[in-house]
Length: 129
Length: 133
Image 1 (tube, each protein chain N blue to C red):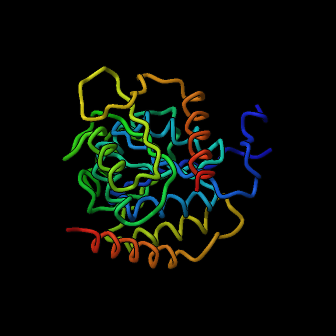
Image 2 (image 1 turned 90 degrees about the vertical axis):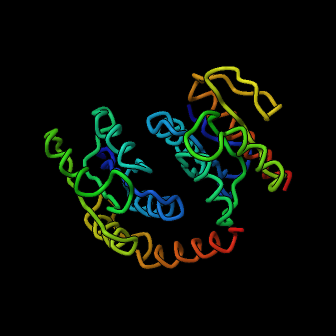
């Protein structure tokens, strides 16, 4: 019998970073919910049916970081919290979570995700008027 | 259920790429996960601005499914009009809880929508877009 995949809440305000990170964690075997703000994360965490067990949050995202962690503690939610202070740290966090996750192996090196995101950000910045 | 999950295209074909734009995360999770269960590669955007950033980043998608009312600098309808102008090959479906006069002149999908039916329709649209090349 296979247990349902662990549900991870990814809090990251930049879609260019959030999407590849979420896909990486999905490749690792997790069910991933994506929140673009701290408010979205709180709404998801207040919905027990979603079964969130772990939150990986970029601290620079509005409403994220320490206040969000404090709120989770105050609400006594049984959610493991991983906070990261930069995109690089968030990706490293994802790599660690992946290593301990339900999948048998990492789908690819998490540093590739960083390269990919940096390239996509450069393309976006060039696209700006 | 199996027949529902099997699209017309060969199983090894590239997955349908669908960009879901919705500012209610619970609705977004629901439709995104339903589409993933059908085999789609789904990108989630919380606002029209995010969706535009993603597209400007140069990542291709086949279909955009966007809510009408959203916070930020543009509505889903404005996004749809912009996409039509700049990415004419993309299919765009706009959804809304009410009928509002706006710049989008094509039919608007009424909210609330059936998850299963909507996901199937979007998959069909994405595969048709792919076949057009």
